[in-house]
Amino acid sequence: MKIATWNVNSVRARMPRLQPWLEENAPDVVCLQETKVVDDLFPLEPFEEAGYNVVKFGQKSYNGVAILSRQPIEDAVYGFPDDADDAQKRVLGGTVGDTMFLNLYVPNGSSVGSEKYEYKLAWLARLAEFLEERYSPDERLVVTGDFNITFDDRDVHDPEAWHEKILCSTAEREALARVTEFGLIDALRKHHEEPGIYTWWDLRGGAFWKNHGLRIDHFLMTQPALDACTQVEVDRDQRKGKGASDHAPVLAWLD
Image (tube, rainbow, N blue to C red; front, side, top):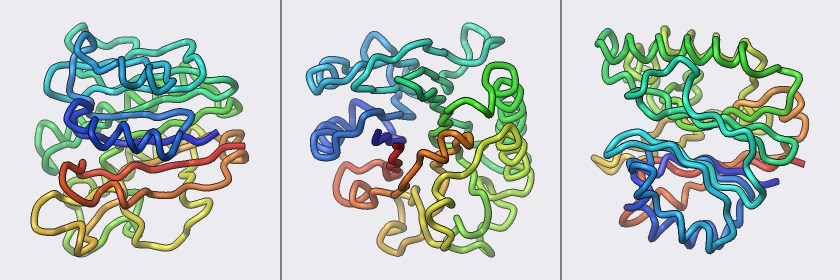
């Protein structure tokens, strides 16, 4: 099974790149974030014509998540159980075959110490509770998406410049560590221990060409899923050229 995660930064704006990418790479499951569209306006037809089943959970202009799968998607999960009706659309789960997926768009947090930062930390605490309540680390579970957090300084092009800044602060990393205490492992680090692997580059200032990036898009897996994971790679080519998202897709392979 080939699986992918990609913050597309508007699914409708990214269709000219997303459709040929799907045709070329033929992933079995794709988790999209920041779709930025209400469900009624989600571009279903091109994905269905390409052979994908789709579940989506979106809102106007912001946030939004979707899962595409060549197999049926069962037991869909929309948001946290205690979400208010107007809650931001950031959580979408489903089961494909023998593998459960949880697709996340974690809040950015804006700046350290801001109200949005405190919201992010509280949201991550809710995620940790949700995992404990709904899932088991003995199950084959893949938690993926845009986490808006680096694990450590290997994920940062300039650790000194980013020290205690948003996406790299100690409190965010500790909150992510509490999420992984459920029994989740960073799958990329099973295959790549080296620094300098990034998934996001600012659209300004030539950041991509300078390789001034961060790794904030992750595959976190329970041990049964990790045991089946044979490879994780970042498709940097999709960050190149006109009309690219600021994120590159990340691919993982499961036996």
